[in-house]
Length: 266
Image (cartoon, rainbow, N blue to C red; front, side, top):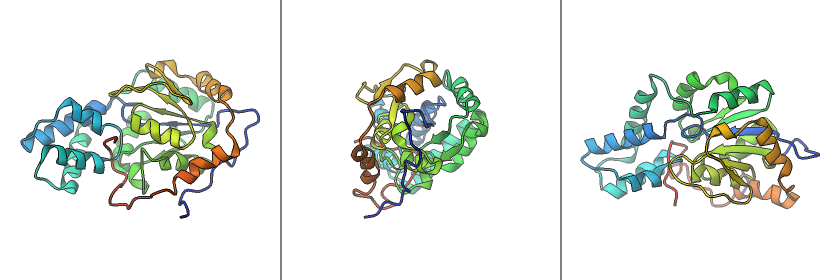
């Protein structure tokens, strides 16, 4: 099967240099994971069900179709997937209408990347309408590219979002840094072959090869990101090609994995 994602790696890097930075949205740049959970808890309370913290750890970080499906199955709520997804998106949108709190260090990091002209992409599983609302507070000018979950056939934890961002920016993902806050997003970034910086929000994330875990965005600056790429072992051609090849395996249908906001992480 042929991947629909364009070939990547159009730049060369001798020696290894940082080519681009990809950033997640909810829980990474903006402190909105709590907003999503409140929206979910409220909607299910109105349906006569109580959500527990264990549910929150399962649904954080990916597309809404699987998250909503999981919550329907877990609670037995009598509601359809499309209707529930609409209710959750609407409840969340109402919450962010008055503004969103940025994570500590987010504005400084974005300003530094922009001032040094580092290609920067916002890569989120949220719908385009949600991203556009958030950009009012984050600054659209801080991003060379924004990619929404509903613009892709598959979203996180698949590598497609980050491979697509790299292709559109004309960079090699193995020389890009991904900043994420959930296991779902970390999995996507690593599957794409990027070096991942995890800033855990709801669920703990352990260190691993090719992954750096920090306490907040305050610990991340351009020098930090450049050092990660420079110090990483250079991937072989086979390793670099494997990330793209992974997108060809078992591509699900669009109904089963549309790019909506959240997902449980199996």
